[in-house]
Image 1 (cartoon, rainbow, N blue to C red):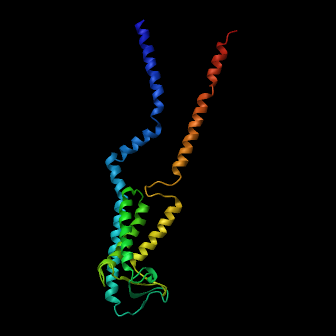
Image 2 (cartoon, helix red, strand yellow):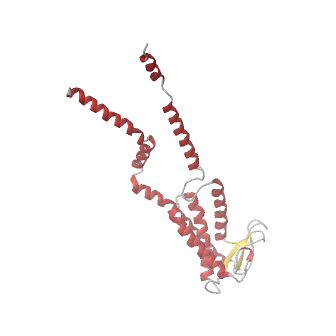
Image 3 (cartoon, one colour):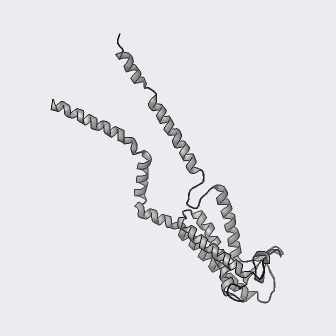
Length: 244
């Protein structure tokens, strides 16, 4: 008798195992496999730091190129002469801008210095949850452009927070800008594209979670429907065991 009891106990254990199997879904198993291939949590943290590194690399490159080009303009265009690059469409001319673009708010340089400082602080705070390299490039362009012009307002004549921004790229006589301005315009275009496309700073895409949730909901409903429908084998068994 004990020999027959032990298989029954083993069968009960097997039933318990069958019940607990769905808890460990194929998706969680796949996630563990991918985590092991990526080198664990340490590797995940390193990959998460990549967008932040991209942001700072882009910003540093923009600042360096901006300041070098401005220093060149100060030495090569000091006589006020205009150098044509593409006829009347694009040229070089030195302008010391005390305001913003289009010489807006001339004489209120300190306001734009404060705004630029505020933008830098915001980008640094946002970078803590940055997980998208596309957003990292866009924010790096903003940061580099803001810092490039902020350096002028802080360090150039006539004084602290009143320094004139060095502009030298003449766009057909409509306005004169610099490399920092180009970076800010490109960043604005990139941010618009990313926002319209639904890409978030954390690397996700707006609406993707809703779509995934609806698919999982439909799958769960299909599974419940399959579980509630009697199988053909069960119906056959019931028919054969029905008393005559």
